[in-house]
Amino acid sequence: MSDSAVADTAGPSTANGVEIEQELKDAELQFQQGVQAIKANNLDQAVELFGQVLQTRCQQFGDVNIKCASTYFRYGAALFYKAQDEQDVFGSSLQAATAHEEADVAEDDESEDEKENVDDKGKKPMREEDLPQEQAEGDEEAADSPGSRTDMELAWENLEVAKYIYEHEPQGNHAKELADIHTLLADIGMEQESFESAMTDHKRALELLSTILQADDRRLAELHYKMSLTLQYLDQPEDALKEIKNAVKIVETRIDNMKAAPGQSCTTGADPTDPSTSAGPTAQDAAGSTATEATKAAVPSQDGNKPVAGTADGGSSAAQLELTDLESVLEDMYEKVEELQQVLKEHLSTKNALKAAFSQIAGSLGPPQLGGSSGAGPSSSSAPSAVVDLGVVGRGTKRVTPMPMPTLPGTAG
Image 1: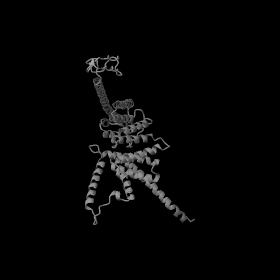
Image 2: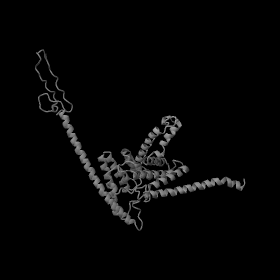
Image 3: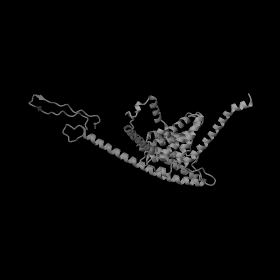
Image 4: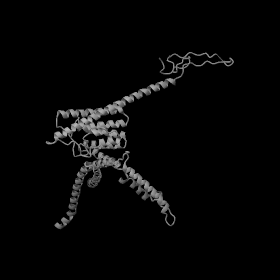
């Protein structure tokens, strides 16, 4: 074979290889740009960038390849942050509201078309049930397309795919990645008021992070705090109080350790440029009172205002800022403890009042004593009631002798 023939054979393959390599390099650059877009709160751009990266990497590696897992996670996170920013003052999604309005307009337009757009032969437009089966199936597929789902739903789907990939990857320890995914899934659950599901994800995230973080890491305190808030929505104040006390204990330990070792920062094991990691609750986060506020307090910071790893010039300053913030957080947590303790007292008071009321009602509804006693409750004596002789009834042809009153269970003195 001649040299030219060899060149002709190898040329396209080499060209394709170079093109693929360049696409992957471009995807990596877009990935980093997406990270910065999230930090700058430019969420539309972040969603677009991560969507492009995901498409490129899935084409090259496959849909469930480990090399695509981080992109699924970032794409899901960006979609979730975007959905949160689109929440209106009433807590409903602006995107969903807009879609509903568009659907109403389309329905009105369709009604008008049925009245006005009648052809010369007097035929009405074809109805959906009159469409061929193939076209009807195509419409159903369109309804299930990504464009028909909300950003929150798409975020959940992408995070679930990322979780699946990491859980089925035999090599490497992905505890941190899975913890981040469960944290965001819990946030989505809180946003959608699926509190049981959110609690399950909170617990799993805590289990994973407990294996890789120090006992005084504020991210553990953050999870305990969010679990406490979730339990409040589940009307479990006793368990909520336990969780907030766990959070308090971690923050107190962290403050003591920082004072004992000045200059130490909390960012051990955390990437300060990574928006998927959280530096823990802030003072403003701890004051949140609604489910939406709770999830926004729970999600990683989007503005980059997180403690950074200490350097020779700014390490002590960053540590001092963190210490000040932790002390402020602790004060808010103390208030939360007092609030839950008051809730428990009110619950106990209500419980006792209800118990007393039910006891009184049960007593008043008990059978009257037949011995002429004025008491309304059942007899306190365990002995059968005496037979009461009612004398002759009617004309003396029949004597009625009533049966003794049986002793009710639990009425014995």
